[in-house]
Length: 511
Image (tube, rainbow, N blue to C red; front, side):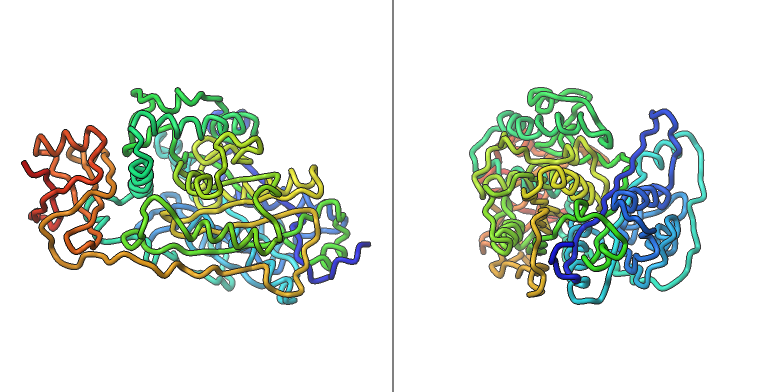
């Protein structure tokens, strides 16, 4: 046996499960059943001589999308206690059952939190597990079929709530930015403005970023799409690859119609030894750094997320590594901008020979709701066991580039005696003032153009005469204004403002 301290937290097992409606043997599994399959696979992956499931004292369940917002609905019902519902499928009865908040960073955040608890002796074995079955739900509803997925499990539950505070802005919602796609499109066009890039050239840049991702997804048996596509295919606007929000074509945004689950099992070195889990299965958690960004309307630069960068830089610094030391990378890719945010800052080429994804990315592997990065961590663990001594970095993004957790992993041992490898990164202090009163005009910072219920909608963010940020809708009934936005180059234009009867602000190009 090695001399690794018995309270050192190590990842001892990872598991993934997936199915597609067109697959032979498709079972149309519920969320809890699919998650149970992943946890069962993770426990088998430990190669423990003894049954490891009863040793799990903590389960953290990741919220599926249908229970991630107060207004969301679960058409087939839901489990009253997801972590315990998943645990009982493998014979686990944890002391703590946690239902985590909403966000794509939550799985990696829980890895850091649980690792720290193990290092303090408060836990001996924990699991992070989540699943999405959106594809099955839509297939069943489309066939007018129903299921009863409700479960009354009971037992203690630590429900941490939705965690949406400060994420949605009433003014943005009022002007039509109600979806993740709309928010990210605003950020993307802000970056395009900074680069001075045309719409066509920028779509091609997104295609060039994501084309290598399709190759990784094509080789991944759990991927939702296994078709290799060229940069040109991804950039070309066609009826099948329509614009969903300028500049995004449909193929380049996160694919939420998936049935995917992933689980991560973490144990103390002492517990791993007691269960006779081979050290060849152990992967060390070197650091998890968790950061929060300013609310969208207060961000000084809508094209960047300093909190995300701070999270990665903090993780690298604490691990004693630089980015060149990292052999394996998975950068969260719900849209292009979270990846560009990292490549721009660190000077990474989009065709870096290491690759920027381990799974195939959210548009191609699949955007398994809040749980995507558990799949990335699972892939990292499997590769690190094969490439012993190397390091992996996983970047996990939540909200509208609102939250970010960066994790670094290796088979090289990490010393947790200082209890400083789970780090909360301070939120940036500098903020833009948000307008609180009507204004005469604004200067366009960014925009997106998308289809609304009654025609096209242009959402605009800009600065008013007091240099405060405000949202508006471009008046597309005004021909010169419509031409400006449909031309894709409204940046820097000064638009006059007027109130609409429904409380919105309309922005129009002056003659």
